[in-house]
Image: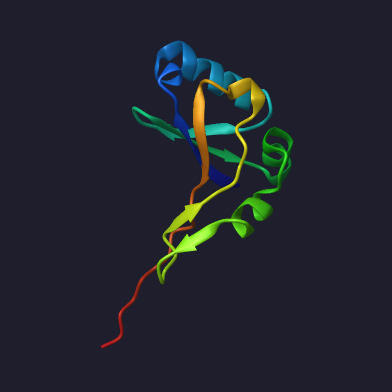
Length: 104
């Protein structure tokens, strides 16, 4: 499963906005995995992600600009679907957790 997060606009941060987002994505096979005051996290198959965002997850990650030696921050060029405009400000890839080990 591919993981991504949505940054919600002010309109998307209420119960009705959140429900609209979840309903839209769940109808397309994407499951909510978490959320906070201004974000929501989801998991999707390759096919569901490509259908909703009109780009493959791999292409979104490949086109990301990485910052720093361990690349913990990524800038993504994933378009917000038209049906979620006004509710969602940004779509971002959730980076894979990496183990950091120091050798002495």
